[in-house]
Amino acid sequence: MLLLSVLKSRFKRHNIYEMNKTEEQKLLEGARDFDNAALAQIYDRYSPGLYQYAMRLLGETQISEDCVAETFSRFLNALQQKSGPREHLQAYLYRIAHNWITDHYRKAPIPPLDIDEQRVVDPGGLPHEELEYKTLTQDIRMAILQLTPEQRQVIVLRYLQDWDYQEIANVLIKTVGAIKALQHRGLENLKNLLESSEINIGGKA
Amino acid sequence: MIDPLDPKLAKEFDKLRSVPNRDDEKAIKGRAIFLAESHRIQQTVSNSEMLRHKGWNHNKSWTTRIFRKETSPMFTTLVSAFLTIVLILGGSGVTVAAAQSSNSDDFLYPLKLFSEDIRLDLTGPSTETLQLEMEFLKRRSLELQDLVSQDKVASTGLTNRIQNEINSVLQAAVGLDLVEREQILQQIRTQMQLQEQLLQKLQDGTGATNTSQLRTMLQDRIRLLDYANEDPLMTQDQLQQKIQDQIREQTQLKEQEQLQNRTQQPSDTGNSQPNQYQTGQPENPNGNGSTQVAPDLSDGYGYGQTDTPGWPTEQPNGWGGSGKNRP
Image (tube, rainbow over all chains, first blue to last red; front, side, top):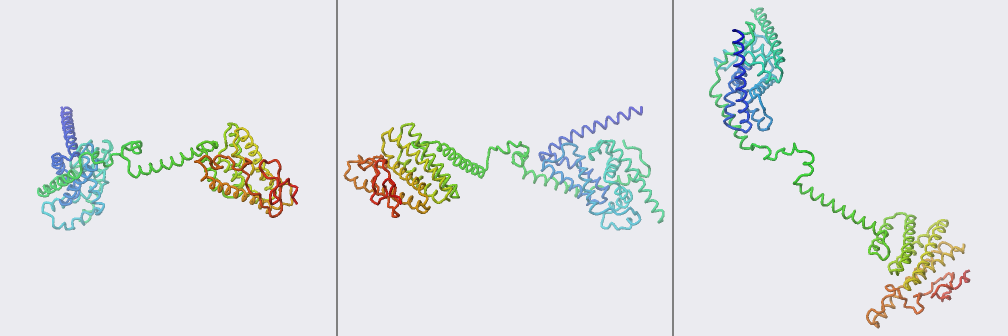
């Protein structure tokens, strides 16, 4: 019975994946012809997820909006140069966003994981909800940012965006096995980072 | 299906999952910017890159890049100039090469002589010029030989050419050192003798007498060389002086004949009496045209001949004779 439900679940996910893939391909063809309807549909379909993805890693709405805007702008430039994606549009957009975030933190290096000090920093001027989110997620976000870019991408897409391995593999242009390995190492590192931060907090407390 | 996760990690991830709602205004603004940018690109760029001729030939093979349908004006000009130069130089080169084997009665013969003049002008040192003149002198001998074999009359151009070449080569040879001079003078004498014999055959075969003046000149030069060879006391300057005297005498003779022709023309009925150099008909009653003034040898050297037709055996200045008058 359990096996049957698992098979049904996998079959359903596979159908959704194939349907999405077909729709995505049609949208991509329209985008290559600079069809406004197709482009608008692409934005409506992917920008919310990209915003969430950016927000989880960046923690600030304005920077996340900048990330989304820059991601779609680069997509348009690629279409203009006839070098845009031929398939896997979603993976392509998330790859751009991830690279933008990586560049963002490269320009403004991630501070060492000292939760106590980070909490002292005044976020200043942020809306209450955003401030609460940023404060609440400070520990895990800082820990995730300490991971390697690939581990970080796998962990976020897998556990926060709920993507399957194949979709993540399309983003990183790797095999599913490589994605699982990255996931395993990323979780281990993340666990260690969080445990060490707890020790620091406990020591200071 | 998400893999089982450590409870602590799952708890932390749940915090991140609850992302604050996106500001609708910012979302709409971002969407509008995106569509406006795509609209701008759509306006400035056509759908097909092929239609814009932008990098359309990058995927073409090398043959289509070289052999294009549309060539640039500069390319066409350069190709035209190149082909013109090739045709002029290559074509003229072929023609000149063909003219080298032409005979004196061929239409390419003037080109042959012209090319010889050019070669002489371009030749630097005098020794090389002399060798070249000797080569051309041998060519004249061969041309005369061809005329003899074909029973054709030698043209005035050919006879004049031979006279000029002999004068030139003699003057050049006299300036050489003693050993070289004797060798080259001997070669010149051989050629002159050959030419004189050929002219004799030509005259006998065709009956034309237009070469008689050239024959006389050749005989004079041969006698002069023989005399110089027999007289070891004759200095280089003396031999040069005698050659120059003979040349001057020859020039005066021509001028006199031309003057006589001009004075006779008014009494002529039309062109019944053409110039001697055109027809070769001597105006002198003796038939050899030797109306020339005897050489003026102020130094008293004289040599004569008795077997040359038309040549006075006793020159007024004592130049002629049998050679017994030589000091």
